[in-house]
Image (cartoon, rainbow, N blue to C red; front, side, top):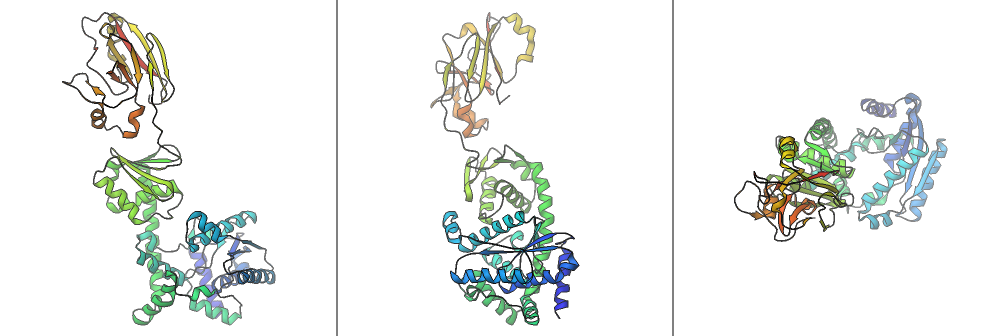
Length: 475
């Protein structure tokens, strides 16, 4: 009977290409029935698989002396099987408090960190964990009850990141119990698994039992197969949408992703959701604490046109929608610059340096003859020309102040500078960094944007003030 059990495991390993010849596999062993079955199964198969095995145990320290006895139990098993053994006591409660996590989430993060460290220590390229078909069924139901998309319903991946493997993922717990009985294997029982306080335990002890009895005796297989199908489709869509993301977005440094909303809207809403999730994962490194409601809030902000709206997501992630650009960034890495005030004289002729933001202004007096000879090639958004004799007073370089009025060249009347910025779709957080060339309180030039009607060159102009900008990040 146990040979059939081992054949099922080796079929699963081959199906998902979990282990290849000469792999070194770190086996996570808690001492419970699932992980003990995993360890002995791989031990019996190691010659067929031609792999090396190492035992790793995380002592959670949550049950005092009992936790220590479990660590000793696993050590004895590793010694009997003549396998290297690594263990470490982890501070679940301290980490839980520090990170604001649940006890289960804190234990999981610390456990995976230990396995990663131990794998490096022993040059292990695979980490085997004892998740079973029953764990898969419980996970699918738990995520359905909490609300989840396809990625959540796909459940536990048989192979994650090419390193985390789960050889028992298609094996039911009933089969494991039979295997343990037949081989006379010892294991330790975690009493908390029998307490229906946690959602997973309630699903295991109550809901699945009810479903088996009243609806589908093969519910574990049904849910596992469903997760497998959805997982395959999820993998395809993830790859497809990752390629789309590169077409509709750009990286603005290490901590900022900018998505073109007009391009994003060309795709079906299901694709939009997934693209946003992939972008968040790229930025954050994972999707822990990111829920479906966060993605829906982002989509609502762009579909309802809430330009300028910020959303604050867990772990310091901020999402800002401005003028058809969706910006996702870590606040700690891409902080909005504190308000910078500047107001300095413009040297005529000569160079004027503005250090923050970085601009260099070059002012010179040229004749109308030189102006005509140069033609319109000089006229770009970072070069402006004025009739010097119409400018009575000193010119300055400053940023905006409350109440600024601007009279754009070629337009009748004036408008508030704030209205000009809105019309030009200039993001609010960029407006203070745009230099203005002013005469008194009269704006002559919004640098890089528009010149004023005041002081414009005409047929009677004798001296032309040419102001150009060089050496700036904007160019």
